[in-house]
Image 1 (cartoon, helix red, strand yellow):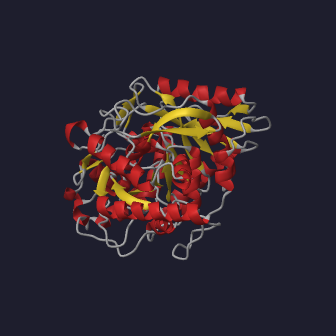
Image 2 (cartoon, rainbow, N blue to C red):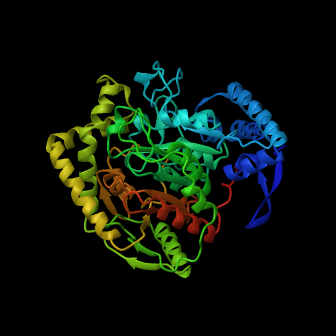
Image 3 (cartoon, rainbow, N blue to C red):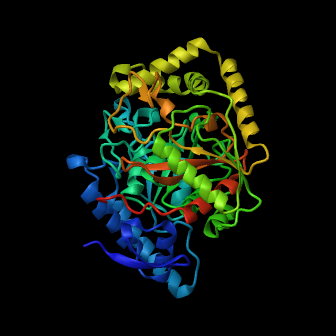
Length: 499
């Protein structure tokens, strides 16, 4: 039987909550008070995995690796540390006893790291990635790894190695990608926190489709691993079920690290945690730019309706809303971003499989082909010039505003096993590249801008919708302030049916 508890918070004094769906903040409060123990919460996650993860019988198939025995030993050790802390009145590490699901590409020393590639199945990591090192140092328990598409090159999550990952809200739908396993694991109660990464929307897209929070930090704020840490479109980051939990994990992950010369800023800053824990719902004096289609993306009616509800809610809270228009079109966005991918990521994927493209799934083969064509048609300098044009346009839309809000994805869902070899038709318009379904890539081009994806509601197919809050370069505080207000004022999604 699933254990239920009563969580008492300033805004909700009688909510029955299953242990596997506790927020990190709730779990830490319970650990410190002794109301429940890390081992109990971890056991609830594993029981939930047995019930819903599959992959058989429509399971969501979100976990690539499980560390049941080792993680339970760590959880029992955390039980003892909390008991001692209660006796002695001593502080405990920031994530002590929390179950954190790591994206498989986030290397753990001695463990497999294949990135979903058959050609890399025998590869093991030599060292922890910086974010894994920091999560462990803060007492977090990496109890499982999560599925991705091959080489994280798609916004659906399936591979020859792991099969199809499904969305807990609608198992015909995908959870998004490339951090699709992370989003699905959080939505299904298989973890309390999760790690993600983002080079074209790979944190924000699955967070949006799975009804959770995803944060793309400014480039370098979260240290990465060579060589792709040098790619100025990408970044690792946190995913969680609340804005506060996302701030907590971001605080642990962020900050300068000796192994990554692009990394910067303090570690363990409380600024974002303090903002998210005390949301100021009076937004008078806050100016928000709103771009409903981001230059003509084919936005689904349900997505548009839910985005407008967010904007109206912020206006009712006192925010000054200014509607803006991006002076680019979808094809310019795709051309700009794939010109960049052709210079770095396409090469990296071909190198990772040592030229054996037949080992790849069809969508990954197509990615290699598209990026090769882009590389032939534009130079690195051409790519940088296109980036700068889009960055200037982002700056124009943000001028005088505290943040810019757009939908996260234009479409309501993508099928779980989609390959999109012939492109995609959205709202009656056909696009050769199915990434026209997502509105995230402009802010990888403008990757010094922090972006927080938060739920905006649900579509008719049952899959959550989302908005992304874009801040001016390096202004993390504004996106967390506005994200916390949206989360506070909008009705909560609750738990996915059947989970």
